[in-house]
Image 1 (tube, helix red, strand yellow):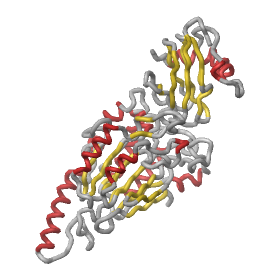
Image 2 (cartoon, chains in turn purple, cyan; image 1 turned 90 degrees about the vertical axis):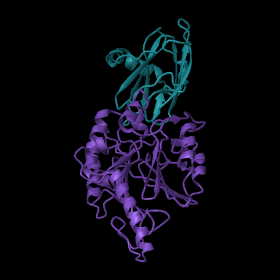
Image 3 (cartoon, rainbow over the protein chains, first blue to last red; image 1 turned 30 degrees about the vertical axis):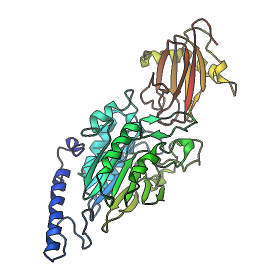
Image 4 (cartoon, chains in turn green, brown; image 1 turned 180 degrees about the vertical axis):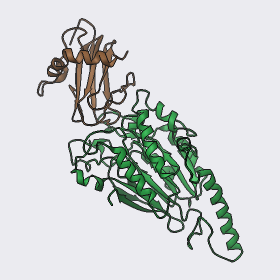
Length: 322
Length: 128
């Protein structure tokens, strides 16, 4: 997955993931050397006196639900608001190592929508890790186009993991298998193949490894009647419960809702395109109409920052207002 | 099992779409009783306010059903048994599927899986 966006960013000058990993690897070695030499100071990228563990100093940004191709109120131009999100990222004083996009890049799985999204996102000059939303696999081949475009180096229908600064990142897909109807209320599924992969993927990790899970639909049931949940999330979380810090980043519901369960924190994200109503507050979860002047209050980006060694990252949600 | 090209869908809608809609959506009556009587006449399912109307449609084998999205967001038509699947239907988009084989076909929207519908296909010549 390291190369998933590089092809789309031929002109970028930022450090790529491979380079960053090499650099971090060097920094880590440097820290060990410095400590063994009796000089407890940090080097290079770590940049903090507390940075005694590899993940310290890692900053990344989550964006979600850009829905390029949506063309109705309250936001007929989601490419513009995505551009504002990217501008906000570019202005961050502590630049993120990379971005993650937690799905619904496009509104209707059309290549030109992905073209536009990638064109705007590359303005951040960062590597981007994508997972699909159900809007990205809504083509008649159910995800073939997404997989061809974004799935390089991934497993199955596009799931993957990678390690960065000692943090294990997992891109889970829960947008393919839906159980239709009211018996299950249309909850999403991760599916057996992916769950078996997940179990193996984390088996070798030490329990002290911070884990970040990205999945488009929430990994806990927020509102069954609208299908805002994942029916087999419990099995996935079972594989993760031995870890001291698990951060779950979801999209899909276009609003920020958080929950803590043991060592697992769940966070849904704001969209960069349009808000959706609070669970059960409207007849259906379609786009929530808001006054044009208020739209940006409902849109945003999220910054995750390991400001201290070990444990969970600090999260900051920033609306797209000045 | 073949898809009808969109231009045919539009012609069909222009010709019978309004009749199909009104016949298919009597207020509150069980929708399944409202089969399109003329054999092979196109039938229409409206998508509005995150619901299929009629939720159950009875047709004769060989009938082409056209779904039309009147909502402000995208929807799709996916058979429970995966035997048919539309792409994403944006606002005002239509999609058609011809049901050749008698039987009951449940379907849902892959973007909003709580939206469900059913097509009952009776043998040709024996509507309802």
